[in-house]
Image (cartoon, rainbow, N blue to C red; front, side, top):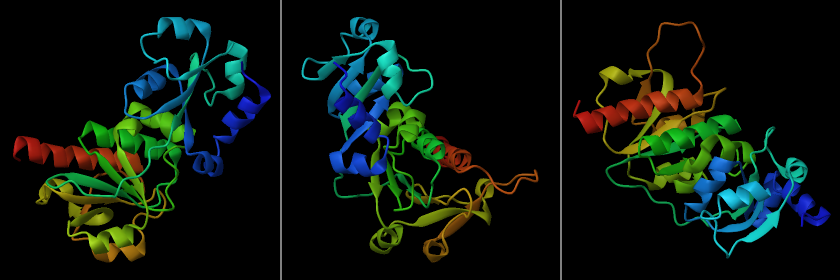
Length: 250
Protein backbone atom coordinates (compact mmCIF):
# COMPACT_ATOMS: atom_id res chain seq x y z
CA UNK A 1 0.00 0.00 0.00
CA UNK A 2 1.25 3.45 -0.93
CA UNK A 3 0.89 5.45 2.29
CA UNK A 4 1.34 9.18 2.78
CA UNK A 5 4.55 8.43 4.70
CA UNK A 6 5.97 6.50 1.75
CA UNK A 7 4.97 9.25 -0.68
CA UNK A 8 6.73 11.82 1.50
CA UNK A 9 9.83 9.61 1.69
CA UNK A 10 9.95 9.08 -2.07
CA UNK A 11 9.52 12.75 -2.82
CA UNK A 12 12.31 13.56 -0.35
CA UNK A 13 14.70 11.36 -2.36
CA UNK A 14 14.44 13.83 -5.21
CA UNK A 15 16.66 16.10 -3.08
CA UNK A 16 20.37 15.55 -2.54
CA UNK A 17 20.23 16.21 1.21
CA UNK A 18 17.81 13.36 1.87
CA UNK A 19 19.53 10.99 -0.54
CA UNK A 20 22.74 11.48 1.44
CA UNK A 21 20.98 11.04 4.78
CA UNK A 22 19.21 7.83 3.78
CA UNK A 23 21.91 6.56 1.37
CA UNK A 24 19.11 5.71 -1.07
CA UNK A 25 18.11 6.94 -4.52
CA UNK A 26 15.27 6.60 -7.00
CA UNK A 27 15.44 4.59 -10.21
CA UNK A 28 12.49 5.41 -12.46
CA UNK A 29 11.26 3.78 -15.65
CA UNK A 30 10.86 0.27 -17.05
CA UNK A 31 14.19 -0.21 -18.86
CA UNK A 32 16.32 1.44 -16.18
CA UNK A 33 14.70 -0.55 -13.36
CA UNK A 34 15.25 -3.81 -15.26
CA UNK A 35 18.91 -2.87 -15.70
CA UNK A 36 19.09 -2.09 -11.99
CA UNK A 37 18.07 -5.66 -11.15
CA UNK A 38 20.79 -6.89 -13.47
CA UNK A 39 23.45 -4.93 -11.55
CA UNK A 40 25.32 -5.40 -8.24
CA UNK A 41 23.32 -2.64 -6.55
CA UNK A 42 20.97 -3.54 -3.72
CA UNK A 43 17.30 -2.80 -4.39
CA UNK A 44 15.21 -1.89 -1.35
CA UNK A 45 11.66 -1.41 -2.63
CA UNK A 46 9.81 -1.80 -5.90
CA UNK A 47 6.74 0.33 -6.61
CA UNK A 48 4.96 -1.07 -9.65
CA UNK A 49 1.65 -1.38 -11.42
CA UNK A 50 0.12 -4.92 -11.47
CA UNK A 51 0.76 -5.43 -15.21
CA UNK A 52 4.48 -4.64 -14.76
CA UNK A 53 4.83 -7.06 -11.86
CA UNK A 54 3.18 -9.86 -13.83
CA UNK A 55 5.19 -9.21 -16.99
CA UNK A 56 8.51 -8.93 -15.16
CA UNK A 57 8.17 -11.52 -12.38
CA UNK A 58 11.38 -13.14 -13.64
CA UNK A 59 13.28 -9.84 -13.14
CA UNK A 60 12.92 -9.09 -9.44
CA UNK A 61 13.60 -11.32 -6.45
CA UNK A 62 11.48 -12.23 -3.44
CA UNK A 63 13.88 -10.38 -1.14
CA UNK A 64 12.70 -7.02 -2.47
CA UNK A 65 9.78 -5.24 -0.82
CA UNK A 66 6.95 -4.96 -3.36
CA UNK A 67 4.43 -2.13 -3.22
CA UNK A 68 1.67 -2.50 -5.81
CA UNK A 69 0.46 0.88 -7.09
CA UNK A 70 -2.12 2.16 -9.53
CA UNK A 71 -1.27 4.30 -12.53
CA UNK A 72 -2.55 7.34 -10.66
CA UNK A 73 -0.48 6.55 -7.57
CA UNK A 74 2.66 6.02 -9.66
CA UNK A 75 2.19 9.44 -11.23
CA UNK A 76 2.34 10.95 -7.72
CA UNK A 77 5.79 9.55 -7.01
CA UNK A 78 7.39 9.26 -10.45
CA UNK A 79 10.08 11.68 -11.64
CA UNK A 80 9.02 11.09 -15.27
CA UNK A 81 6.41 13.06 -17.17
CA UNK A 82 5.11 9.79 -18.59
CA UNK A 83 5.70 6.98 -16.04
CA UNK A 84 6.28 3.51 -17.47
CA UNK A 85 4.78 1.30 -14.80
CA UNK A 86 7.54 1.08 -12.23
CA UNK A 87 9.85 2.91 -9.83
CA UNK A 88 12.46 1.46 -7.48
CA UNK A 89 14.46 2.63 -4.49
CA UNK A 90 18.06 1.37 -4.34
CA UNK A 91 21.01 1.71 -2.00
CA UNK A 92 23.71 4.19 -3.03
CA UNK A 93 26.87 2.09 -3.24
CA UNK A 94 29.50 2.84 -0.62
CA UNK A 95 32.64 4.29 -2.17
CA UNK A 96 35.72 2.15 -2.15
CA UNK A 97 39.16 3.71 -2.07
CA UNK A 98 39.59 5.57 -5.39
CA UNK A 99 42.08 3.97 -7.73
CA UNK A 100 43.16 4.43 -11.31
CA UNK A 101 43.15 1.53 -13.74
CA UNK A 102 46.56 1.01 -15.26
CA UNK A 103 46.75 1.02 -19.02
CA UNK A 104 43.35 2.71 -19.35
CA UNK A 105 41.78 6.14 -19.58
CA UNK A 106 40.06 7.55 -16.52
CA UNK A 107 37.69 10.54 -16.63
CA UNK A 108 37.85 13.55 -14.30
CA UNK A 109 34.97 16.03 -14.35
CA UNK A 110 35.37 19.63 -13.22
CA UNK A 111 32.15 21.46 -12.28
CA UNK A 112 29.78 19.52 -14.55
CA UNK A 113 26.55 20.84 -13.08
CA UNK A 114 23.96 19.91 -15.70
CA UNK A 115 22.25 16.59 -14.83
CA UNK A 116 21.64 15.66 -18.45
CA UNK A 117 25.29 16.27 -19.31
CA UNK A 118 26.58 14.14 -16.44
CA UNK A 119 24.20 11.31 -17.29
CA UNK A 120 25.26 11.45 -20.93
CA UNK A 121 28.96 11.46 -19.99
CA UNK A 122 28.49 8.38 -17.77
CA UNK A 123 26.78 6.57 -20.63
CA UNK A 124 29.44 7.58 -23.16
CA UNK A 125 32.21 6.57 -20.78
CA UNK A 126 30.81 3.06 -20.45
CA UNK A 127 30.46 2.76 -24.23
CA UNK A 128 34.18 3.41 -24.65
CA UNK A 129 35.22 1.17 -21.77
CA UNK A 130 35.92 3.84 -19.15
CA UNK A 131 34.94 2.35 -15.81
CA UNK A 132 36.10 5.06 -13.37
CA UNK A 133 34.98 8.68 -13.18
CA UNK A 134 36.21 11.26 -10.67
CA UNK A 135 33.97 14.28 -10.03
CA UNK A 136 34.89 17.37 -8.05
CA UNK A 137 32.66 18.57 -5.22
CA UNK A 138 30.81 21.03 -7.45
CA UNK A 139 29.57 18.46 -9.96
CA UNK A 140 25.88 17.59 -9.85
CA UNK A 141 25.03 14.57 -7.70
CA UNK A 142 25.16 11.41 -9.82
CA UNK A 143 22.08 10.05 -8.03
CA UNK A 144 19.94 13.02 -8.97
CA UNK A 145 16.90 11.47 -10.76
CA UNK A 146 17.68 13.41 -13.96
CA UNK A 147 21.23 12.03 -14.01
CA UNK A 148 19.96 8.49 -13.33
CA UNK A 149 17.46 8.77 -16.19
CA UNK A 150 20.05 10.15 -18.62
CA UNK A 151 22.73 7.61 -17.69
CA UNK A 152 20.34 4.66 -17.89
CA UNK A 153 21.95 1.48 -16.63
CA UNK A 154 25.49 2.78 -17.17
CA UNK A 155 25.40 4.46 -13.76
CA UNK A 156 25.08 1.07 -12.08
CA UNK A 157 28.23 -0.24 -13.77
CA UNK A 158 30.50 2.79 -13.26
CA UNK A 159 32.85 3.54 -10.36
CA UNK A 160 32.08 7.13 -9.36
CA UNK A 161 34.05 9.16 -6.83
CA UNK A 162 33.56 12.71 -5.52
CA UNK A 163 36.37 14.77 -4.04
CA UNK A 164 39.17 17.22 -4.71
CA UNK A 165 40.62 16.82 -8.20
CA UNK A 166 43.62 18.86 -7.10
CA UNK A 167 44.41 16.29 -4.41
CA UNK A 168 43.88 13.46 -6.88
CA UNK A 169 46.31 14.97 -9.39
CA UNK A 170 48.88 15.72 -6.68
CA UNK A 171 48.88 12.12 -5.45
CA UNK A 172 48.58 10.38 -8.80
CA UNK A 173 51.51 9.69 -11.09
CA UNK A 174 49.22 9.32 -14.10
CA UNK A 175 49.47 12.00 -16.81
CA UNK A 176 46.60 14.47 -16.95
CA UNK A 177 45.39 15.78 -20.30
CA UNK A 178 42.61 18.29 -20.60
CA UNK A 179 40.09 19.55 -23.11
CA UNK A 180 40.72 23.27 -23.77
CA UNK A 181 39.74 25.61 -26.58
CA UNK A 182 43.25 26.41 -27.80
CA UNK A 183 44.99 23.10 -27.22
CA UNK A 184 46.71 20.74 -29.65
CA UNK A 185 44.54 19.30 -32.40
CA UNK A 186 43.44 15.92 -31.04
CA UNK A 187 43.67 14.35 -34.51
CA UNK A 188 47.28 15.45 -34.99
CA UNK A 189 48.66 14.80 -31.50
CA UNK A 190 50.27 11.73 -29.97
CA UNK A 191 47.86 10.49 -27.33
CA UNK A 192 48.87 8.32 -24.38
CA UNK A 193 47.10 5.00 -23.83
CA UNK A 194 46.61 5.66 -20.14
CA UNK A 195 46.03 8.66 -17.93
CA UNK A 196 43.31 11.03 -16.82
CA UNK A 197 41.17 12.98 -19.28
CA UNK A 198 39.91 16.16 -17.60
CA UNK A 199 36.67 17.72 -18.86
CA UNK A 200 35.75 21.21 -17.70
CA UNK A 201 32.40 22.83 -17.08
CA UNK A 202 29.98 23.81 -19.82
CA UNK A 203 30.33 27.50 -19.00
CA UNK A 204 33.90 28.11 -17.85
CA UNK A 205 36.00 25.17 -18.98
CA UNK A 206 38.74 23.79 -16.74
CA UNK A 207 39.28 25.66 -13.46
CA UNK A 208 42.40 27.84 -13.27
CA UNK A 209 43.82 25.91 -10.31
CA UNK A 210 43.76 22.66 -12.32
CA UNK A 211 45.42 23.96 -15.49
CA UNK A 212 49.00 23.60 -14.12
CA UNK A 213 48.44 19.83 -13.79
CA UNK A 214 47.85 19.37 -17.52
CA UNK A 215 50.64 17.48 -19.22
CA UNK A 216 48.85 17.79 -22.54
CA UNK A 217 46.25 20.32 -23.67
CA UNK A 218 44.01 19.05 -26.44
CA UNK A 219 41.12 20.50 -28.41
CA UNK A 220 38.63 19.44 -31.06
CA UNK A 221 39.03 21.37 -34.32
CA UNK A 222 35.99 22.82 -36.05
CA UNK A 223 34.99 25.47 -38.56
CA UNK A 224 31.76 26.75 -37.03
CA UNK A 225 31.17 29.89 -35.02
CA UNK A 226 29.79 28.32 -31.86
CA UNK A 227 31.66 29.32 -28.71
CA UNK A 228 32.22 25.78 -27.40
CA UNK A 229 30.94 22.22 -27.49
CA UNK A 230 28.57 20.70 -24.98
CA UNK A 231 30.59 18.81 -22.32
CA UNK A 232 28.92 15.51 -23.16
CA UNK A 233 29.55 15.93 -26.88
CA UNK A 234 33.20 16.89 -26.30
CA UNK A 235 33.69 13.85 -24.05
CA UNK A 236 32.24 11.56 -26.69
CA UNK A 237 34.45 12.91 -29.47
CA UNK A 238 37.61 12.71 -27.38
CA UNK A 239 36.98 9.24 -25.99
CA UNK A 240 36.18 8.04 -29.50
CA UNK A 241 39.58 9.23 -30.71
CA UNK A 242 41.40 7.66 -27.76
CA UNK A 243 39.54 4.41 -28.42
CA UNK A 244 40.43 4.50 -32.12
CA UNK A 245 44.13 4.98 -31.40
CA UNK A 246 44.26 2.10 -28.91
CA UNK A 247 42.16 -0.44 -30.80
CA UNK A 248 43.25 0.33 -34.34
CA UNK A 249 46.91 1.11 -33.61
CA UNK A 250 46.62 4.50 -35.27
